[in-house]
Length: 404
Figure 1: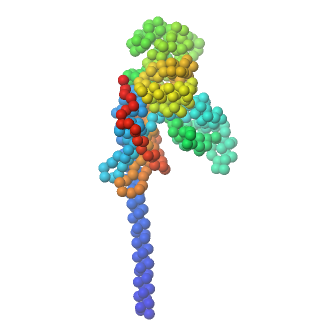
Figure 2: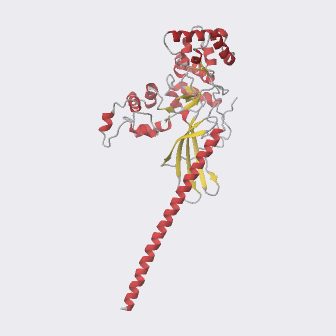
Figure 3: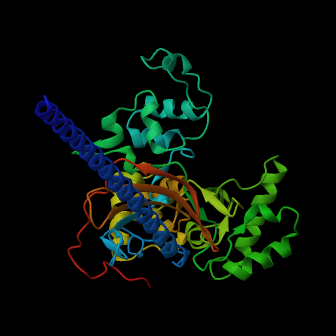
C-alpha cells in the first residue's frame, strides 16, 4: 500500500509539474508577445516622428515626388531602419493633396472618380442630408448614414454602391483606397512663399491703392491697364449684388485681359483669402487617375501633366496653368481646373511599421498630419491590421529631375 501511495504521489507531482511548466511557458510566451507588441508600437511611433521631422524642415513652397519624404525618393524612409538595439521601422509618406478629398469634392469629380453618377450621389448624401436612411436601415446589419464629413477613407465601404472591388481595386484598376483622403489642404501662397493677394480684400479700397498693392507683386505680369480692368470687374460684380470674384476663372470674363497675362498672374492672385485652401490637388504628386478625375481634365491632359513633371516639376501655379491651357486642355480646362490645383501641400499621410529585432511581431500605424511653418500637427492616428507592402526598389539612383 505504501508503494502504491508513493507511486500515486509521484504521478500526481509529475502531473502538477507538467501543468505548472505549461502554464509558466504560456505566461512567458504571452509576456514575450506583449513585450514585442509594445516594442513594435514604439518603433512605429519613432517612424511617425521621424517623418514629421523631415516634413517640418522640407521646402514648404513646392512639393514633388523627389522630396526626401516621398516613397520613391532617393534615400527614402521606405527601407528597414535600425532604431537602437530594439528593432527596425519602415515608413511611407503620401501627399494627401495628391488624392481627392472626399469631404470637399463635388459631384462631377466623384462621378469621374467612381465611374458611376449614382455612387457619387450616394457619397454626397452620406456626408449631407442622409436621405437614403431607409436603405441603410433595411440591411442585414442596419446602420445610419453619418450626415457629416467622412472620418476615414474606409467609411466609403458603408456607402450604397461602393463595393470591395471599387474600394480596394482590381489587377487592372486602382482602388479608391489609394486615391482618396478625408482632408487635404495647401498653403495659399505663391512660389516664393508670400501670401497671395486676395482680389476681394480690396472692396473697401480705392482704385489707386489697389493698383499700387497688386503692381508691387505682379508688375511684371500685368500692366496698370490690366489692373484697372480687374478693378472695374470687381466693382461691377459688387454692383450686381455679388461678393466679388468667386474664382480665378472669372478673370477670363474681364474684357481686355488676355489669357497669357492671366496665366502669369494666377500664382500671385486668389479669390479665396483663407490661409489654407481645402481640396486642392497637387499636380506634382497626384497620379494620372486622380488628375483625370478633376473637372475639365481629360486622361490625355493628365498624362501630359505627369510626363511634364517627370522632366521638371511645376514650381508655381502659373507653370501648371500654362501647361493646362496650352498643353491640350484649352480654355475650358483652364477655367474648370485653375481653382482646384496646387503645387504645394500641407497635409500628408504617414504609414509606419515597427518590428523588434528578435521576434516576428509588427504593428502598423497610420497618421494624418497637417504641416505649418511652425510644426507638423497630428490630426488623427489609427492602427492598421496589415503590414506595409515590400519596399520599392529604384531602377536608377539618380533623381529623375532637378529643380530650377
